[in-house]
Image 1: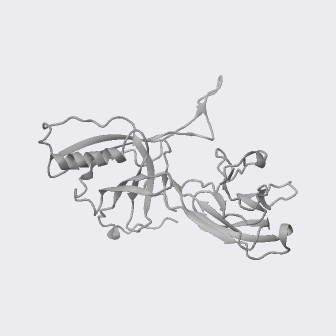
Image 2: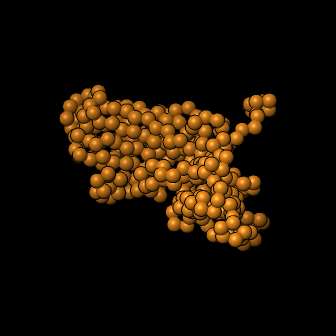
Image 3: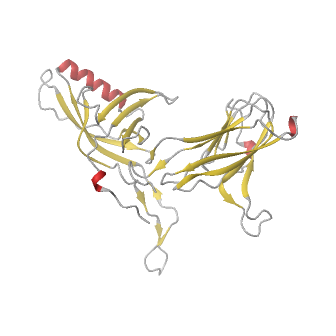
Length: 323
């Protein structure tokens, strides 16, 4: 059933939009507000009217035509293209020297050599944002009206490229500690349940990570929500994968997305070969609004062993898509 929209509660909102320069560790080095209540040209940079490419992810249907076939046959896997975003930025200062400083800031954050983050807030909550990594796709149009020294404002037509075309919002996570179990030492067994949702409108490939291990540990993880099919000896039970034993002093990251390295020990030792080509095949489906159970098992380890799961929310559009 569709929830009616209360149009009386849809007042005009001046929602923030930001350009963010972020380092490799995820720290925000520079945050430039370009729209919203913080923008009164105090930073000298603002979003002007007219922008496109922010909404639907560009997708091309893949189809084949066979001899004598009427029409075509669609592939089950349409091609997701890179995203081109077009928007206009204004730069302004009190004088020529100030304008030079504003321009230097803008092109340090937004350029051809590295990505910056475009973050858009779609409501008034602190977590109501989505962001995308962009860089210049072509040089901004630079037709000047006034001679150097006389200009106090410029308008720039920006064409930006997002090689990853999706918008991302706050990462969801859960963590368990294996502080109880049966047996001891290498035969110690402890079972826990992680819980995480995926309310986004795109599928979510989970990631798992441990703390630094203090004893040899063997983890068994579920393959999304997948179960063994009818006719299998374990029909109806959750499909799982057992991670090769990791010794004391080790920690690791598991990425279930099939195109990424599945097992990544944090000491950069070889991990892929240990998986023996065993891959995860199932993501969390889109619109999983309630946390789902992810049963995990540890053999070995200690009462201080921890395991976390991370769900990266990925969206088609910079607003909307919620179920």
